[in-house]
Length: 500
Ligand SMILES: C[S@@+](CC[C@H](N)C(=O)[O-])C[C@H]1O[C@@H](n2cnc3c(N)ncnc32)[C@H](O)[C@@H]1O
Image 1 (tube, rainbow, N blue to C red):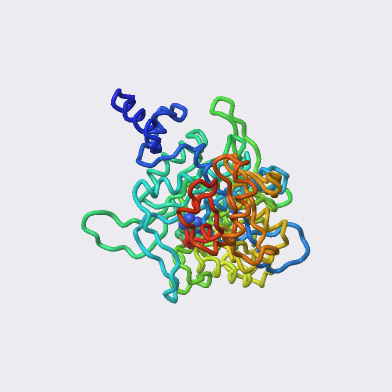
Image 2: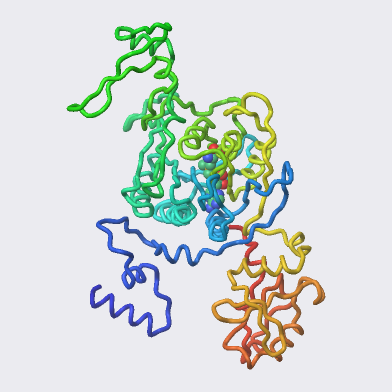
């Protein structure tokens, strides 16, 4: 730190000002790295996790209910907050894979690509905006990746789908978040398509998927993703060295081991054909969904189910939890459902949520929406961060109380002060959840506030919080002066209802 920087920080602290994140990083540098991506507004990982509010999941509707305990989850809201809530569920042991390991086994995300575009559905409905660019885009994704890392099971895997615009920055970020040693592949999804004559560059015909492991324990199920051989072609390529045994089965000599100690062994052709060709990192056999492809939902930027089939088969087992935090048209949810995995899809767009519901309710048994109809296992639609108060206010008191405390990140710690019941604490100050059922409606009145103040005003520190759906009056400056209650400390449900 230079003497000028030191002086500036002292001045900020003495004036009671807030130290900007750039300064915090100088004061409290993250663990030393050999190299890292530096940009304006990069937050500390600890702060990202600590400062992200977990928002309660408000069930809106369950589809195909059949009495089983686990419901797949379709979450409408911002994925950062929703993932913090999922993280708390993981910590409570509520998210476990088929073999009991806590966390999510596989995450696939296909976020906006910083294209500066507005995307619309096939009937011109608004789908989503892709207008966050530059370092804000990098930090937007980095924050989500930090939460994803925490959510993954110890042997989990993540695939991030991007294109040439930002993949190079995100590769560096993923090295930072997941560890360079956990990088597994840069998968090139090469798709054929119309070639255009552009004078100054080549046609861009691929997307890139960054595949990282959560730890060295992460396995890939190679046998599940091998490319089947065409039997005749394979036979042709083996023809010269094929032997036939007494039962008529064809076999060849194969070798295993290192050059010095190579050992020859007998292998049946059927087995070779069945095992297929090991998959490499250039995937050019998967078509882009064009025109009136039967799988198309009308949602823009929809990816082919075959792409997700490969990823899900390669990096999860039946019954495992697969998460897509930028679910879009629900390709991951649909493929996971078809392949017998459990799934969680998050999206903040209404069209996406509507498209996913419709897709899951009209599912077919085969990947790519082929074959006989398949009834999806139960799934619940939740609101996260955008709430419907009309429904919330009908919750039983205890559920409402817990919802309100969680919404604002308060500790559930009931206590009595000055004869008044408080429900919890926030930043060491008492919090009361206003009981809208027995105190004359959803709105807190000036009289209520005055009586709370008279009872506890001198017994609490500098402030207290009241969580109430709304206020019936404007605070007057003279009322606030000299009291322990000020409008900034009044939490209203309306704040959480702001569109994200
Ligand atoms: C490229 S699309 C995903 C397409 C998807 N893979 C498919 O096959 O249909 C990206 C999606 O991310 C969603 N999204 C963008 N920012 C988000 C956020 N902060 N939280 C949740 N969803 C978000 C958008 O609404 C959009 O549906």
